[in-house]
Image (cartoon, rainbow, N blue to C red; front, side, top):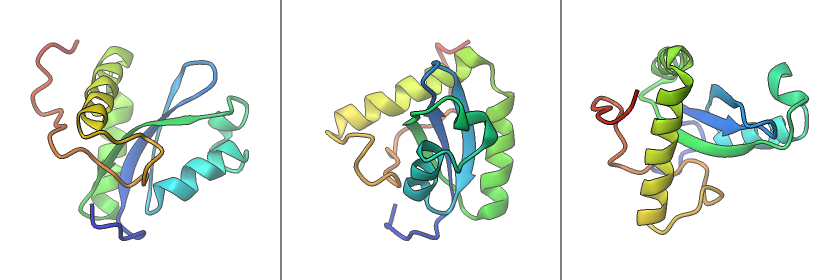
Length: 117
């Protein structure tokens, strides 16, 4: 990603109770901070703290919203598989998920979900 704060992205956070919340934002770092401050979604307000576990850039806001809807329809198992792949890519590139939240490993693609439910 080019570091542009206005670049839309879809993200998933893991809540304190282990559940996953999916959303989109033009500034994921600020959005995650808002979730942790109780100003994000109603769903995450009572499940703080949240941790970023997936982030994927989108071409534009409309694409981000479409992708968010698609990810929300994934089964829990499929979401967990996508998260695991993203975290593996972060580890391979020696990044942490707390480094710029806009970091998206280049090789994560759910088009080929082989091995995922």
